[in-house]
Length: 328
Image (cartoon, rainbow, N blue to C red; front, side, top):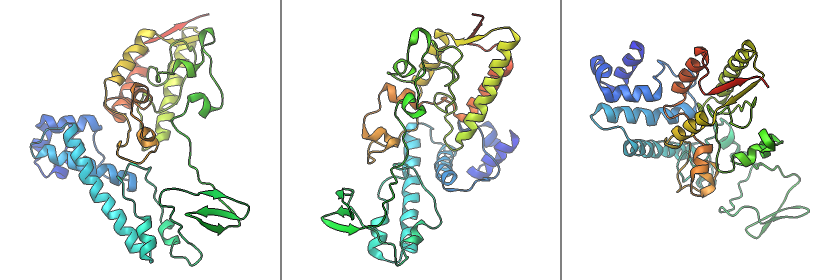
C-alpha cells in the first residue's frame, strides 16, 4: 500500500502525507484498485485509460470533487488530445492528402473499438492499394465482375468480407445452443428482460449451471481471459465444497440473486459509448439504453480489482453465501 501511495504522490505532484491522508485521493485509489509502478503493457488501450485516470487524479489533487461531471470532463479532454494525435499520425504516414483526409476518424475514441497496427496506414502508400470512399453509404451492389460504389463499377477478382463479430445478441445465439433449467424454462426466456445472476455465474432455476462471462462480475475488458481463469477458480471451489458435503446439486437462492441484481442496477458501471456516436455495439447500436441493456453490460460497482478481491474472499470463506447445496 505504501508503494501505491508513493506512486500517487509522484503522479499528482503532491507530498506523500497528502496522498496518504486525503480522503478523496484514497477514494480514487480504492475505486481503481491501486496502481502499478510500471505499465508493462504500454499499448493503445493502457494509453487511453491512463490519460483519463491521470486527469481525474490531478483534478482531485487540486481540490476538485470526484464525480460524473469531473469524469466527463477528463474523458472529453483526453479524447480531444488522443484523437488529434491519431489524425496527425495519418497525415504523417499517408502520402496522398486526399487519402489521408478520408482515413481520418472524426468521432470520439471509444465510439469504435480501438484498433492498433504498425502497417495499416503504410499500406495505403503502396501503388497497388486504392481507397474508395463510400461517403458512409457502403457498397451499392455486387455483380458478377465487381462492386458498384457511388455509381461507379470496380472490377475485382476477389472480395474479402470483414463484417466483424457479433455481440449483444442472445446467449443461445452466440453459444449455438439453448440451455434449459427447472420446468423446461429456457435461459434465453429467463433473461428476456436482462441478465439475472449472482456473480455473473449462478442463475436461480438453473441448478448446476455455471455461466462463465465477464458480465455482472469483474467485467474486466482489458484482459478478458483473466475473467475466465478467475471464474474457473470459483467453480472449482464450489464443486469441491459440494463433493465434500455430499451434495449433487448447487443453486443460488432467489434472494441472493435479487440482491446481486439490485446492486448492479443501482450502479452506473457499464461499458457504454456516447449516444452521439455513429451506431455500433459500444453504444447499443444508437438505441436508448434501458434496464435490459444496463443489466447485460453491468459490472461490479467498485471495479474489477475490487471484484477479484471480493470473490477470492467469498470462495475461501467456506460459507458460499447465497448458494444452496442439496442432494436430489
